[in-house]
Length: 578
Image (cartoon, rainbow, N blue to C red; front, top):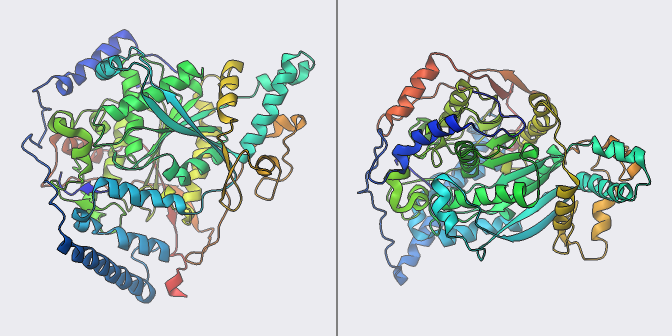
């Protein structure tokens, strides 16, 4: 992921926007959808052109050697500094020091690779040990015409049912055992032989998490983000559906949004999952797409999901906030020049960059948040997106949205993808608490999946294409001997006393994520959460929009939301200090 250096009411029970409010929101979008009309505070002109990639010559091979040598020297220097003087952030272990050092300034060598090469390198993350105790089922489906309204009407009209999208279902081991028990019980109920079981299973509520991966709109896939989707499924006790939307530059805005909306409509219309049972979740660019999805549904009168979980959402493509500079020495996001051939903003917005730069579906920070469902927003205080995420929480709260904003000390962009960090587990625990405890209090009724939805999802999830992620992080095809028993049998990773039998159907509870002990930090009880204001957001004087500046000034008069800061009261013991 390479980024350019300069470049009112709660919605429980899937409300549908009123005709008058929908008209008002559509009027606000008019300045972004009328050709030739630029947003009032736009600063990037149509004259901005991405530099052409120079042709490769054999003597350019030395540049690769120089890049590797310089990066190795920088990492070695930072490791030595970590060992002698301690980490650059007090809670960092050696792993985080190495990762931050490697990613810092890596964009200086971006001319050596194209987006295809970056995707290839990112795909190597699939060789790393996978999270355990889950069932993964790849699926492919055709995109049909759905008479979508608004900005997607033209793209929708061109669909003829031949284009395909893919995704995958992710189900935690304990959730799978519960579902197996419920599905078997449903067969008993269908025969009418157990009325008591019928009463119990009808009281069970269940949720589906619609996960949208990040990757700066140019890289990433559901498979590459299982470090997030699997723990998300485990801690929320929900079925996770991860969509594999089209990437830029092959598909520019609003193409990826069209795919995300199509995936949501498939859950609601084809699989008959009630919108109030769906939780939208996304990280980074996926977080921005999650908000764009919510705004599109609201603006065009479609039913909204119950809530959204946003991890380090990218909500301001103008990059106006100062944290893009102040946190650059620590974060894992490499920064490149605006004219870099790999510029993700130019790749995503394509030839309509000026027209769409501040469109609320591309930069949600500039949108109207009134009428959106409850939001759980998590960010690291060492990431470059910190300030715009702070403003997002403030603006959404001011619009009447129920917001839970969490800031994690010393954490970088999408820190949830690093399983060796203690805050990673704590953030997933917070997601589980939000879904299982807080969300039911915000909804006027408990959601329940109808038998038809259960039947469709059972058929799709329990298929021959599924595979099991076992305790060793290995992917075992479901058809392989012993695979199903690995998934169904109880083991030490589950909570004591659990059972897959129908007799214990009502006793199912959220599983806990496997804890790992690492050499570079010590699990400590000193981590605690406290109500606290995040650092005051500020703007970059050389690259700021008037809209963002006004929002910063408004924040200074008093944040509209409360922020929970996860802080460590004393430095963690690091590898270098032993």
